[in-house]
Length: 136
Image 1 (tube, helix red, strand yellow):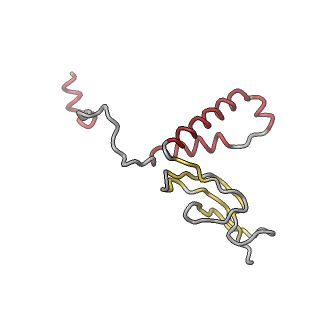
Image 2 (cartoon, helix red, strand yellow):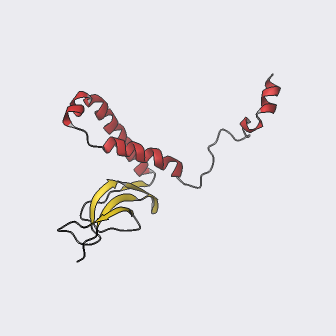
Image 3 (cartoon, helix red, strand yellow):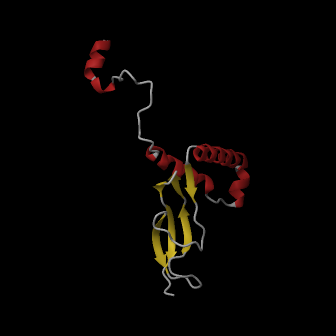
């Protein structure tokens, strides 16, 4: 019976070195999406009423995020966290929209949707931002 199964599913056979992880060339691209989703969910602002109702859960998630961020920092992954008023940098940011906002200069960040991530000096994911289009 075992021979029949292995003949029917040859792609399920493990290679001789199956105990080691495949070489990804130092890339964290497979990890970037889950990290971004967890990071975004954990940093999302919640109303005070729901925060009080699930304080223990939120505290646990925040502790997990802090530890995950520490581990990723040790391995060279750092967040790209632009602030409102910073100048747009196409090497680190992705413009999601442009809008004229009084009191701002063209090219200034007016909203931050998501943070980005760098692996050493390589961009894993750009920070998604809104940019002012005012004419100076």
